[in-house]
Length: 327
Image (tube, rainbow, N blue to C red):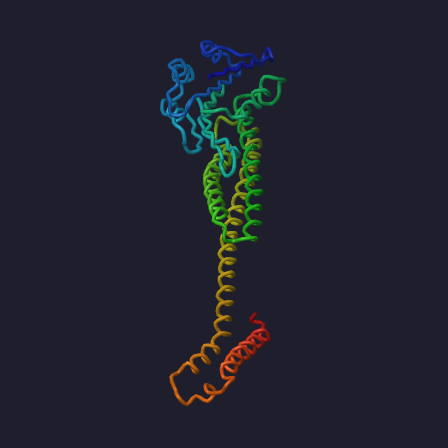
């Protein structure tokens, strides 16, 4: 699927154009062209799209390969006639699943190319804005690029907030019963997801820090503040991710401590029971010895005296443990 939008600054209007009209449209500096391509990952696009990328837009073959292959690292590269970047849209699916959608973006003198492998909702929002009334995204390609990135990064917030809810729920369940394998597995899955998201956010944060400092020629000096705002958002998200990772680590420690505490209580209980029964074992051992002259053995109430002695000593030890607050 390819969708090509053309905005003419003189006419102040936006319209769709065909792929064979792009070459002439790019020649007019008054045009701002947005070429949005959706094509499955790891599958080369049709020949007409390859011709558009390589012959019309002059995209380097290695960047075309980046567009085709999935799971590339976020980056920002500058070439003679365009800049090329890779960012990720991140979305919640269900349970602990998170969707990572790669977005490849080329920014030329009067065009923006977006190449993606699946539907990204934020793109539709920006498209609707681009097609409607004239606003700041029609100024130049870098501002259109900013609008796309801004919407994508805003989508991170819902993912991070959803993690907060999941961590709170798992934490509450962990307090009730620390020996729940599903909770431990769930926390570990969240930890791995946060690590993966953090890896992406760290790279993107570095990209837009450089953009905010004017390291990229495609971005005008007066536009640096817009990319500084994106950097600030990513920095806050990164702080939040680190706090959530620390919370999960603390929950793991809490689980270990609670499990250890329960085990200690069990050992303590069994030890007290053993201590209370020890005198009974001693008495039973003494009267179980094979001696003929054992005074109470010949007594008519000898058996009852022995049982009473066992119970009496056990009660005394129980009272002693209670006074010591061991039970």
